[in-house]
Picture (tube, rainbow, N blue to C red):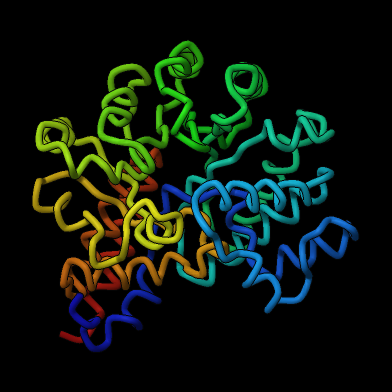
Length: 344
């Protein structure tokens, strides 16, 4: 990969950004995890930052899921939910993230004993506080933990449709893909879509292009989480480009989970050259020792971008978001102003 062009690190740091593929629990930084672990001794999660870094070193995707579930276990009451959510927004504000669609998996917390209504109240309280105090606008994607099967899908759809919090905009599907075909989740996506939620499943991260096709045909995906294997199917790339279906690309995550062998081998450039809309995201940033600014720097190197190119990537995320049109116009204006003020 080429080196980052001079000055771009500072440009990225100041660039107003939107993030569309970032997980609620997976965004818990070491300081947040340490605080939660101190609230719940005996959890098995280390409190020391160095030990946490070792804890967050993954052997493969299955090990990542195992560690992720362990961290989920630290979210035991509504105050934990609120603390996590607000502090995640604080970390976003430090990166000039103005808008984020945070993927939330309520089933994981509710089955551990947090009442569903209390969970909704906690994330909404944190959302309104984050916008008021930090200038970060949060919206929710409620996510089915696919590895828990149809009962989890039913419960997630129930909470999304019957308890729908004000910030909820979309419905997703995560977890391992192997052994959990996408078509079985169709009834739950149909229900969510009928209630006005947008479809944003993960697909094609650890399986082949057929999983992306299933997400498009069966789950009516409007955006696709990861979609890494789409690069292996020219017909699929052409479809994504023609129908303007964005991919939520998370380069460092894809390497950490072994979905791709290296950053140099990441298919991001192939997506762009094929005309597929792409957005840049961090997925589970502290777990992968990254953040959105770092991912923009990775993208700049993979695509050999200058400041204008990076501003274009930021605008891609705004265009692909479910933010209202007035909000999109404001954020695009911020991006334009940042670019205009940048030394040529």
